[in-house]
Amino acid sequence: MKITFMGAGSTVFARNVIGDCMCSEALRDSTFALYDIDGQRLEESRVILEAIRQTKGGYGKIECYLGVENRKEALRGANFVVDAIQVGLYDPCTIIDFEVPKKYGLRQTIGDTLGIGGIMRGLRTIHVLKDFAADMEEVCPDAWFLNYTNPMAILAGYMQRYTGVNTVGLCHSVQGCSYGLLEELGMQDKIEGRRDFIAGINHMAWLLKIEDKDGVDLYPEIKSRIQAKIDDPNFHDKVRLEYIKNFGYYCTESSEHNAEYNMFYIKSKYPELIDKYNIPLDEYPRRCIEQIAGWKHEYEEILKNGMKEHNRSHEYASWIMESMVTNTPYQIGGNVLNKNHLITNLPAEACVEVPCLVNGNGITPTYVGALPVQCAAMNMTNINVQLLTIEAAHTLKRDHIYQAAMLDPHTGSELDIDTNKTMVDDLIDAHGDYLPKYH
Image (cartoon, rainbow, N blue to C red; front, side, top):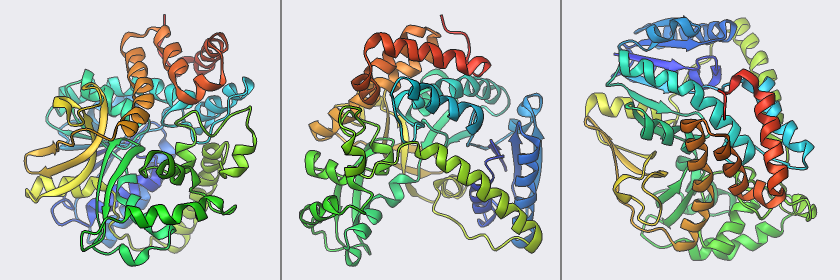
């Protein structure tokens, strides 16, 4: 068994996913191939994972592959490929994604999934994933590509439509959705044995059903509690509770993410909304700086005091691999193409997030049917941007980038068409060789 991790310099995430595999009897004897283009970060991951491997009994082996020239060998013969890359890193590309739009008065919170930041991140990442796919089709054509990189629906959607690689997109926001909602509303007594049903698109999949262990619908009680939280000046999940209030359902990803997926909350004409909803502008750059400093400190501590015990996490990747290898059924919330209209009121070419069954046959998405019309409408505002970004990457037509930005709900509500195009041109220029040439 060979498990390849693309972007192994994402050290904390590589530690979690590969460390999880080392906790599984079915996976621990694998060859763990670590690939990155940054030698220092690759070595840091190797040191950490080797320490985990030793604490887990020394099973399997770790191999490292540095640089594009060694990428094909990293992938050769792989059974599973985990993708967690960040093309362009925080510096320069995330800085570009935030600072160029800011010159035009366009503010963002996370900028990795939708909005102009998500569009640019998607374009520069597809540029790299095309090469991954070509290598995989040659040297590991039957492998499963487990994508954790954002923008999820754009990247997984591209891979599923335009390559022959077995691809599923994975996000941990599904697992914690109903738990987090009940926790923050003081309904902890309803957590154990709860049943939920979630479907939609990545980062905006809807909690369509939530029941307690006896099958009692919890939404009426949830709705009775949300206004007090919305009125609390210190509460930070207000946007998603507003979704319940105005659209009837809670969604998977955090309020700081969802604040920029629509035209409602970040508005230059209504600056008071930022404080009202506790919206953290420039949140992702702030997190990047903190994570870089935090990892440096953590790595120094590990070198000084040794590796602490790794306990298997709730990330889907190792459980999926184990399920396929042992033919043991497992359920995930997966990002898959909407073939055969799994969600009947979303387009077939959209990448949707739906319950999926995993076993020895692979990953089988389940039929959902129609979303509530208002939920489908909200999803479509995001899907429009996703499909146009994929089209831009596929055709290399600059007009499709303009159109994606124009139809993005936040960007389009803040900027006129000409300003939007000028901003896109500036972003393309600033990205330089991180993007292909668009005509």
